[in-house]
Image (cartoon, rainbow, N blue to C red; front, side, top):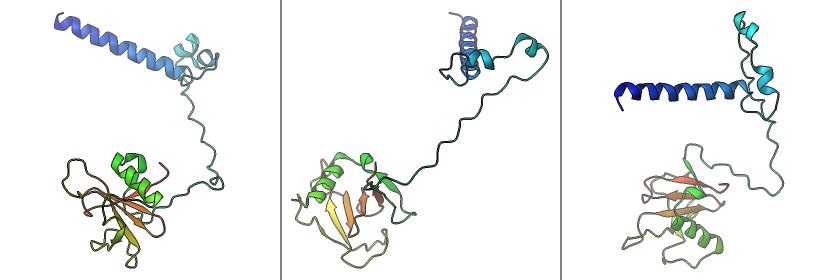
Length: 174
């Protein structure tokens, strides 16, 4: 295929894409109304008279969110300046550790559950004894590794993958 033929092929593909996009927009954003395409398409006389093609209407705003149902988990970050992470975004070993914490153990390391003193001041300041740390198994590590879950007495949970250099608050909703 010559470069000229490739150019024609690219132009043909682009025209097809543009035609498909225009058809989608003129059909009321792909709505399933059978008359949507006919009613929003300009007539030949309207197009020749120079009148503008009607633009698709903006989506209707969604209804305001109601308060959560009774018993639903409502999560409010303890420190808005601290990044958060979804539970589902954590490694499987962290989820295993969170499960052990929920069951109260048994833990794989004797130092799991000890008081975390927050010497680095990376978590919100609380009284000594407020935080506790738990090891997250690191595959291939000969020791406890650098990954931890730290919990607060009020139920908040934090994740660190770099041995307390940084923390993310764990969002239990996701």
